[in-house]
Length: 137
Image (cartoon, rainbow, N blue to C red; front, side, top):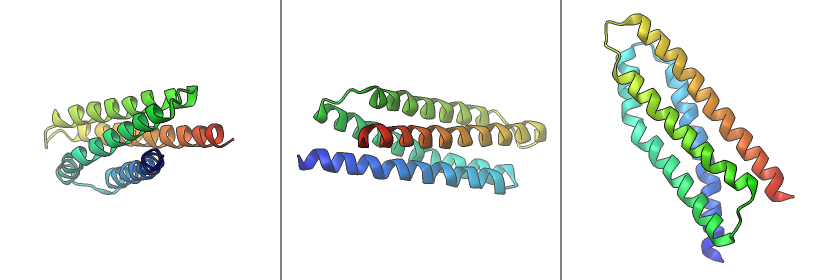
């Protein structure tokens, strides 16, 4: 039983770690002006971003397997993890093709990345609220 409780606790804290990570990335996208600096920052934190997302998915799956709990709200969490991962991969691929002299593409990338991170935050918050409402009551 202790393993189940620890897995659920770690999963709960990883949700906040993911929100913090996305919030930090959004902050840097909004405030960092030189694109080269932004690119270096995003390139350096991408492995940590994916590690947190993978740990979040893993702990969720472990908790689901131990509890034999396959409710619709738990099933929703799995695609949310994949959507966040896929959007981050798309963002990374789009960033890699931009050269330092392509100012218009850099501006478009910043707008695109803002939308991705805002969508990620909204997705996580909505999923968290739904899961807390459903699983607590």
